[in-house]
Length: 80
Image (cartoon, rainbow, N blue to C red; front, side, top):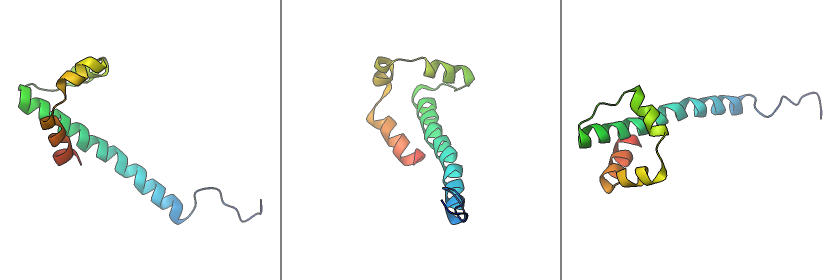
């Protein structure tokens, strides 16, 4: 390796990597916001921190029961 090697990320590559990582969290917020909007509109509930904890404790069967075409439309239209 020569003395001019600066590592895997330098210059424009580093700037592009930083910009990409800044976009990912905002994208997650839009997708989760779309999911929250669906459940608030569909079931008339308010989402709080406790509900996010319960969401993490659900199993696949419970999640499958909540999925629908309308939910997918919310995610695609509002979240993406």
